[in-house]
Length: 551
Ligand code: ADP
Image 1: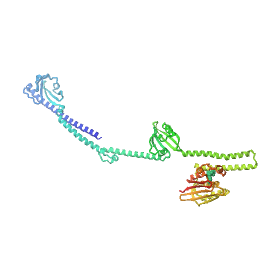
Image 2: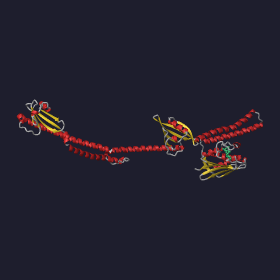
Image 3: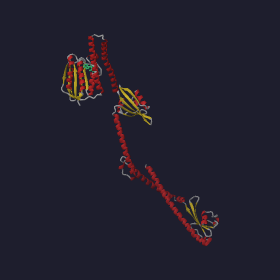
């Protein structure tokens, strides 16, 4: 920049300088030429008077001063020449100035020497008898003047060069130095020459625009990061070569990679389903697939990204659908189990009814059959009721009213309801605790405690006991049901809360179990954000505790 300004200003100043010198010289030269012309004319007119008076004899005594004088008769023959012998000169009738003078009375001409270093300026006047008097002078041309003055001209040129150099350097420095020291971050705070003000204003304006755009871009980036980072789904953006462009931590966690990650996404996961999905998307098709990885099930959704109808990459979303798949499996199992559980009593009812329909049975047997049909029907009703309860809790489609429930009072009521049942087996209930209130759904809490107490009777021994303890601490309320029953073998402990899971199916059936009691307890606890624990020793008894958080 500095060099460029220096060069241009140097050239400009130098050229202006040379042009000025040339112009001045030209004007002077022109002025002197005019002057010489005038002198020639004056001299010619002055001589004209004398020659008119004295004729050719005027030249007899003529002494040449500065200019050359030529006297020519009306035919062009040279009669006298101050510089040469007239005899030696050829006819001058064809000379430009002579021709003109003969025609108009006066004639002018300028003739250059072969080397162009000299020029002859002629002025001719016509005498009354038609003869011509010519005054000529030889003058140096501009070129010869210049050549003659070469040394001073070169010295002047050299001086001009140096002067121009110094001036240009100062000018370029004066322009560039303030530009180089500009504070571009705060353009408007610079104190510099006026011509820069519009530029600085524009810069400040642009700075503001850039800052705004950067802030906007940053905001968008933060928003994007916040959204993607808070996604539990894996999120990936890849280019057309499957090279990773953007990702979120969930995706990296899924691939077991610690960020930062780069390179081909296909190197992160070699599962065929994943690779197929990626290549389908990169071929321009939206594709969905599932893949298994570390016992988890994932759904992969890949969408191609187009620009001008060309695939330039893909966006991949990976969802962990393990839970969903598990729920689906459970639901399928539940449906199968329900059908099976319903079918058994219905088959019995149908069998008994068929036998009775045929009329081959005695009156006593009809009574027995009727009792069996009644029992199976009761079992069906209990089963259907339990299925309804668990469906209500599971589907969360029904919203229950929460209220303040005194667990002690509720337990007392449940024990009363179960009293007959307990007495039949000579089982004694102990209710330990005092008024303890929690916020919950009375109906569900009732079912939970009822089922636990019912199990404690069903799976107890004759003359056993059931302790129902309500215990309140600062942070929680616990309901504990402890029996002295048959207990649960250790290998079954983890599964008894599953739907239709029974340790001993025939025993459960015999005591009227549906296999859904503990599952209802579990779902009730989930509904109330309560924790369940189960301790059991085979042959000694079982303790189930539900702990409600106080919040
Ligand atoms: P059920 O209707 O068969 O009682 P539950 O879901 O209530 O079904 O219980 C599942 C299984 O767990 C029962 O079949 C039984 O084998 C076992 N069980 C539940 N509670 C007790 C208990 N208090 N003592 C011993 N076994 C129990």
